[in-house]
Image (cartoon, rainbow, N blue to C red; front, top):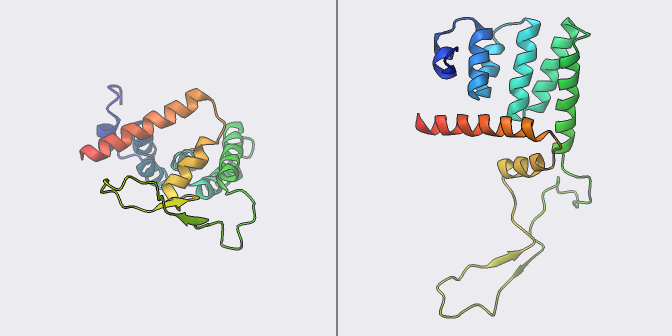
Length: 171
């Protein structure tokens, strides 16, 4: 840990709090949540909630913050993070609009063929006006862009995520 080699430190630690902290600092939020979940202390519940929040698992994070607050009701940081988790969950909800009862999923408005396309081109794809259906990951990214947060907090989370993703690709 002193050398900031958090991944190796996580492999060495036997204590779930230490192992979870090492995973968290390495940006391995899923592994951190699992490690923190192995202990029922108020600190472990709080840290687990933080790891879940970083993964976008807002309902689970809210539940874990509530459990921590049931054990330590006046914990200011836990209350603030619970409010943050609720706010992010609210921001992630699709807007309340008339989606025609399709559960918020809309198809294309119409299919438009471009008759002006260059006939010499081999590109014969249809163009769809209106847009394509987004994957869960794309939808999450779109909603996360709308979340208001301090740039330093956002960049820290982004770099940790990118670092974890790069390390996962190397393995």
